[in-house]
Length: 238
Length: 290
Image 1 (spheres, rainbow over the protein chains, first blue to last red):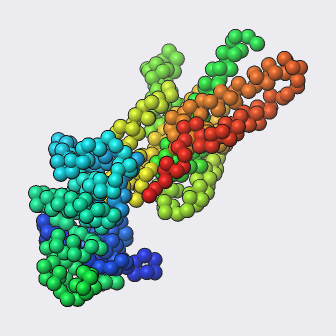
Image 2 (image 1 turned 90 degrees about the horizontal axis):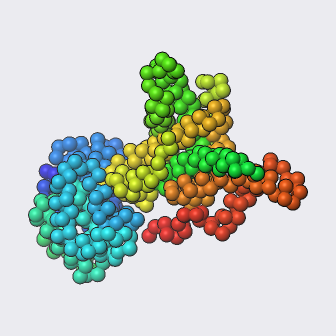
Image 3 (image 1 turned 90 degrees about the vertical axis):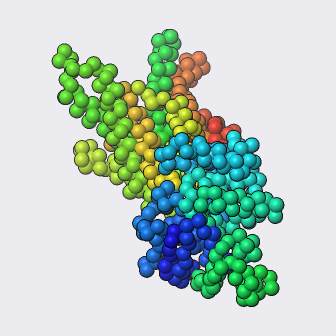
C-alpha cells in the first residue's frame, strides 16, 4: 500500500472540515474523491501534503513511514508526493523553465533533471514553445500543463490533483487528462484526483470515494460507482 | 571653493552613500522576498559595527600589529569584514526565527511593530552587555536572478504558500534572506567604523531610517534601486552643505548648514511626488495576484 490514511480529522478554527476520513491508495493506482462544494475534498489533499495541521488521532503513512513526521517540503522531496493545488498557483513572475527548475530544488541527481525536463516538454510540447515566457502570462490550459509539469519535476510517486479541469475548455481538458494517464502508465505515478466533474473523475480512475460534509459515505470501484443509483442522482445529474 | 574641497565632499558623499546603499539594499532584499520591511534593520547595522569592532580587536590581538604583525593590515580588514558579515548574518537569522516567523500569518502591522521592538531590544541589549571592501551589488543581483536560491526567493515573493509544495524549504529561504540582508548591514557597519571610529548603541536609528527612505526612494523591493538611491541620498545630503555655502556667498544670504536634512529630504519628497513608486519600483498593480 502506497498511502494509508486513518481517521483523518481537520478543523479550521471551530469549523470541522473532516470528521475522521479513512482511505488508501496502492502504488500506481488512480483514485478519485468526489463530492459537492465544501465537502472537504481540497482539505483532504491539503492534509496529505501537510499544508493544514491535522487533529490528534489522525494517522497517515506512506510506504510504512509516518507521514506526519515530514514537513511539507520533505513530503515532496523525500516521499515523492506532489500536490497540484486548486487554481494552479504557479509562480507567475518566473518563466516556464524556472518554474520547472525550481521544483528540482532539493534534487541531487542533476543529470536526470535535464532528462526529466525534456520529458515534460515531450508530454506538453506547448510548454517548450513557451519556456522563456513568464508563466503568469500564459493561458489557463498552458498554466495547468505547467502545474502538472512542475509536480512531475519534484516527485512522482503520488500526484494529488485538485480540480485540474477547472476553467479549461473540453479540448484542453482532454489534453491534460491524456497527459496524466500517460504519466501514470509510464512512470507508475499514483494519482489522487479531486473533481467537481464526477463523471470525468470516475471514468478516469479505478477506485472512488464519495465525500459528504467531511465524511466518506461510499467507496468502491469507479465502474460500480458510476452506475450506483445514489451517485447518479447526486453527482451525475440523474 | 577649491578643487580639493569639492573632491573631499565628493568622497564623503560616496562614502556616506555607500552606508545608506548597503543598509537600504538589506531593507529592499527582505522586502522583495517577504513583503515586509524589517524595521530592526538599522539596529542590525549597529550590531554589525560592534561585531566588526570585536572581531578586529580579536584578530589584532591574535596576529599582532606593527613590526610584529604576522598578517598584513589589508588581510586583517578583509578577514574582519568576512567574519563579521558571517556573524551578523546569524543575528539576522535569529531575528527572523524569533521575531518574524511566528507572525508570518499575522497582519503586517504586527510584524512592523515587532521589528521596532526588536530594534529597541538590540539597542538596550547593547547598553546592557557593553555599557553602552564593499559587497559588490552586481553579484547580489546575479545571485537573485540566476541561482536556484535566487529563484526560490523570487518564487517566495510571488506566492509563499505554495513554495513548500514544490519541495523548497520555505523557512530556510526566509532565514537566508535575512542572513544576506544582515551581512550587508554588517559590511556597512564596519565601513562606518573605519571612517568614524565612535560607535554608540543608537547609531542604527538615524542611519536605519534614512536608509529606509533610500529603500523607498529606490522603489520598494528593488535592490538595484535601493543601492542607487542610497548613493543618491548620501550625495544629496553631503552636497547640500557646500551648496548652501555657495548660495550664501553668491546671494549674501545667511542660511545655516544645520538646515541640511530639511533641504535634503525636501528634495527626496519632490522626487517621490513625481515617482510615487520610487525610481525603480513597479506599480502596485503589476504585483496583483489573480
